[in-house]
Image (tube, rainbow, N blue to C red; front, side, top):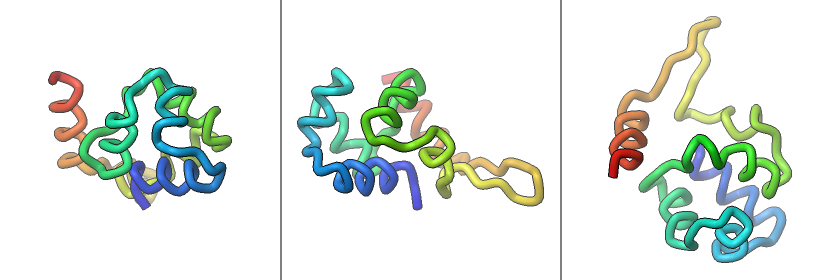
Length: 90
């Protein structure tokens, strides 16, 4: 599971549309769509608010393949991180 799946699955569980989630987060529905398609990642400052709206913990949000813990070490998906950094710059 990836961050995009966490957002999509939990949004569906609480029966919110992309537009409703976007309104609660003060972002555009296109932004939510981009997150759910894996085109971009949410801004780090929005993570707590996203978790609150989706009724999940921050730990649940980050238990994804994008960030893996192996034998006590954290292994990052550097391709995903580079994509995130690029989207943050733009």
